[in-house]
Structure formats: structure tokens, C-alpha cells
Amino acid sequence: MVNRMIDGIEIEASSGNVFADLGLPNAEKLKIKSGLVSEISRAVRRLGLTQEDAGRRMGIPQPKVSGMMRGDFANLSERKLMECLNRLGYDIEIKVRPTAEPVGHLTLAIA
Image (cartoon, rainbow, N blue to C red; front, side, top):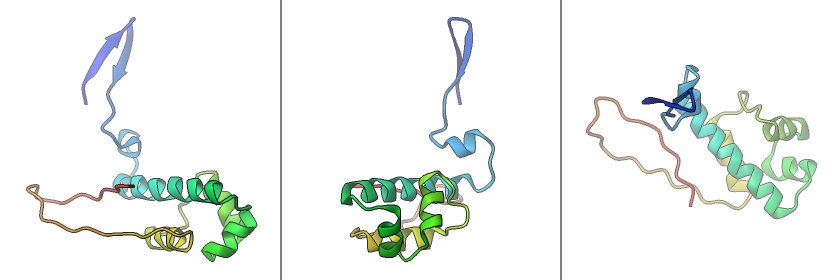
């Protein structure tokens, strides 16, 4: 990351992953999960669902929907979040390819 000064304030450029920038463990996983949750929230709004209706459709209780909408998704796996999107009418495609790096990375692309 590159730091620079603007009007006497040091600005640190983001790595593109706020969780990594904060030094949180499992930053890539958190970024993927937060992207899935963001898309779930958009789908719930687009479909005009109440939290109760959304929970029934996704197969999770309303309190978990409420927590998810507030950013509490630690207790939900990536697999469960993908299942929720499927139940909201989304197709999910997982693409695997070799990388030039010694260790690969997880990325989420939403069309």
C-alpha cells in the first residue's frame, strides 16, 4: 500500500480488501462473505420481501436475516450464503483456474 499526504493528513491506499487492511484473520473469506451478503440484501430489497418472508425463502430464521442485514454473518458459511442466493433466484458459477502465484486467491465477481 502507498501512503501519501493530502492537506497534512496521511492517506493510506486500500489493498482492495478492507478486512485485510484492518489486519483481520481470514480476510479473503470475510470479503467473499460480505459480497454475498451485500447481494442477498439487494435481492431482498428488489423482491420486496420482509425479513420474515426472506427467511422462509432462504431457509433461515428471521433473527438470522436481521443479523445478516446488519452485517453479522460470522455464523453463516459461504456455502449457506450461496444457498440463500440460489433460493432468491440467483445462479452461482464457481470458476477454478491455475494461478502464477504460489498460493491462489478467492475472488467474487457479481454480474
